[in-house]
Amino acid sequence: MFRSMMGNWVQAGWVSLFLLAVMGLRAAVPVLDHVFPAALQIGSTQSVTLVGKFDPWPTRLDLDIPGVTWEATTNTGVITVRVSPKAPVGPQVIRAFSPEGVSAPRFLILSSHPQRAEVEPNDETRTAQVLSDLPAEVNGRLEKNGDVDSYSVELHAGQNLVARLEAYTLQSPLDPVLRLLDAQGVQVAWNHDEVRSLDPLLAWRAPKAGTYVLQVFGFAYPADSDLRFSGSAKSVYRLHVSTDPVARHGWPLGVSRSVETRVRWGDWGVPEMSSESTLVPSSAIASGTVGHSLQIPGHRLPLEMPVGDGKEWVEVEPNDTAATAQTLEIPSAVSGDLDRAGDEDRYRVSARKGEALRLEVQAAGLGFPLDAWLKIEDATGKELVRNDDSGGADPVLDWTPLESAEYRVVVGNLLQRGGRDQRYRLSVQRPQPVWSASVPEAFLSLEPGKTNEWKVAITRRFGAETRLTVSVRGLPPGVRVDPVEVPEKALEATLRWITATNAASFSGPFQVEVMAPKSVQGLAGVQQARFSLVSAGENNGVPQGFRRLVVESVSRLWMTVLPMPSKPADKK
Image (cartoon, rainbow, N blue to C red):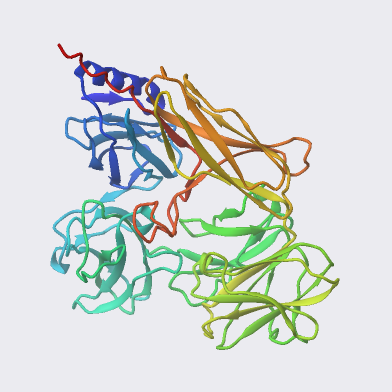
């Protein structure tokens, strides 16, 4: 059995390079399509299948996670993974690499909860796999076209069932579906897409006690002309099933980092808001974070809530006319709902001439089926600016008033629908200057004796017009990249990678760092340039791209210095 220590990939890498040189082999670039199962429990040892192509085997893996080690078995693509109880919980990135290159990043999730494996055959209701102890986290795979996986659960009268699937967000080529059947095989509930992604979420209250069957199946993603259920070795998923209360949202929908926020909550499958509440002090919000994990009494899973700079208000009706508009401070946020068709909610803000403001609605991003629009009116009711969306489903306005005055901020529904699920959070902030950097790829291949160029894109917002310095950390011997000074207002930098003719073969991580000078207040510091894994293009696995993933960007990039080509033998 071949052994590779995760915490020491460099040593393992050079051993493999030596073996390849001795054996006269030339490794192909490994292809890692998926990891199955997709999740492991911390404190466990598990056999894991790497779905893809690996020639030769064993491959080398970049799995830079504290407390995780692995061993390759003699079966191609199968490894044994040991996860320490102290390993970090959450989604992690894994890559396979060789002297010739590196695979695309894929995901391995570490969970603090027990993991179950799908057991075949379970295509039909009569062979449904019994989930006798809930909540449950099940790792499964739709292995072939036409595959359906069935799971049996016992429910009491009035008991809520919440089922959630992860497949699309794991980069599986699936548009998955969940459906629930009663004991007679009649469909009683189903869900195709949860608002935030193509992954489904089903919440349902049982009218009577009995045995119910939860089924998982899916269509091909991206869609094609074949209407049958899709499946393949890549079609992995995680199924979460619970009868415990699972919070859908807080009320208000966000919490504040400046003042305490008293939060009530609404659970999936329960139409009424909880009469209980919990107090979130501002001291509980980590500095610089945009989200907070709230542990709600009686709930196993925490609720993720957005964080704002000012007070979090709740809408007060009536507020649909200019005269009844609710007053908002700057900065602050308000949670409301468009509870009837054609409803418009208005808020009064006093803004100063030349003061940059950011107004943002969160609705679809929080899982609500509201297609919101946002506009600003002056005191006469004249529309000054409007937005339906901003590169996503929710609208954002970056606006600077021309006069100091009182204005109305208006939220409406593009589809003219109404109801208690048409909820939103409107925030009004004074944005601070910010900048960020991105790179065009997650990996880079270099040939000895050649020079490559790589462009780093700089995004500047709200007056972030400082000069920057771009440099590279983690360069191997034989590769040089000089730091690049980026002038004020410039939106890109070009890095020149100079690889010596005698540069040794290398395959390993590196980072691109972007630094603002210490003399610039509020902008000083170092950021790492990131590569986005989400896309509407073709650079993350499928033509339409994955627009939401469990990990959406990486700053740990990968460099391959290719081996020197072999010299042709002299002719005699």
